[in-house]
Amino acid sequence: MADLPKISIVTPSYNQANFIEQTIQSVLSQNYPNLEYIVMDGGSTDGTAEILKKYGSQLTWFSEEDRGQSDALNKGLCIATGDICAYLNSDDVYEPGALHKVGKFFADHLQVSWLTGKCRIVDRQGREIRKLITYYKNFWLLFKSYNVLLVIDFISQPATFWRRDVVKQIGPFDEDLHLTMDYDYSLRVGKQYKLWVLNDYLASFRVHRTSKSEQVREHFDEDLSIAKRYSRSRLLINLHSFHNSLIVAAYQYMQSANS
Image 1 (cartoon, rainbow, N blue to C red):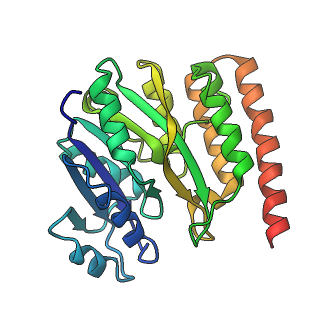
Image 2: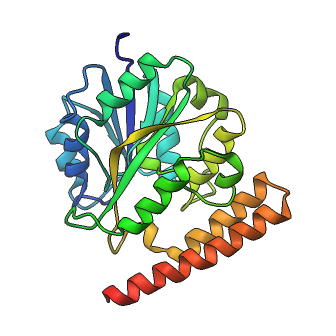
């Protein structure tokens, strides 16, 4: 096996003191031998800085006002030096052993530039929820089709990694997007690079009352507008719109059932 590549992880954060320590520990406990970990905090006022100070010798962190999540990501990726890059939000976590699996996959498959894996959905306490949604996304991962991606965002951001050359080629995240900048980035990458799938769970995506993912209607309205940027196919856009209506209805049902 080739030497494991250097992996740079960027965590954008703002007032996530309730979760960021779990995020940090999930990265550092990987014991990946060639890791660069960068936390870009937007000047939190909830005690996040005090948590970051505890880990100052094990990561690089900044706490200053920014223009939002995409701005924080762009700043972090700009200073990242790893061969492989990814970002993990400050309320999500990596599964044990994830970085070793990712590093080995890239080392053994030099033709791979863009890699994603499976991702669980967990609640505030870290308990797995919404398993049907996870199975649904895993099903579409089998196809790895760009046309399907224009209809369904089946790529889980916390479980996605790129070679540094991809980040340089594609450029920064769109700072005008606040909910689905990851979907926009996937569609940009997908125009130039083949998607590879690692058939393993790499991360867990946390859902809680204050997470952006709970802005369901706004999220899917924004992702439809993004799909329209990259496709002129009336069929694909209509399918995307219809699919969004079904998913929004499903989420609203789940939210009402849990209220």
